[in-house]
Image (cartoon, rainbow, N blue to C red):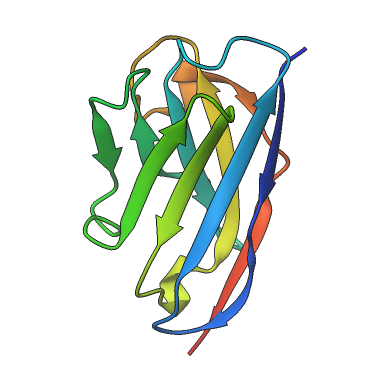
Length: 124
């Protein structure tokens, strides 16, 4: 059984940085694409970033491009989301997810394993 555990969320001021981590267990890590999604209160879950199996492709939502960076460490079975220049618009619960394939997909339907989420709150 694949298990994903996110960590690194918290309460920060606008302009600060946070690094979210997702540690995976229970299956091969390196052959899959991975993604980060977020859900703000009262809104639907949305795509944030994704990375392909070898790190060769990274995808970002327009609102985070240039501020967020996704990376992976296959030796540690970990995918990381570095978030810089945070704004109140980034306040949400952040989820990591494993792709059905080795591709960096933007659509939720291509992900079949999800973590429980980690809360990020940015105060203005």
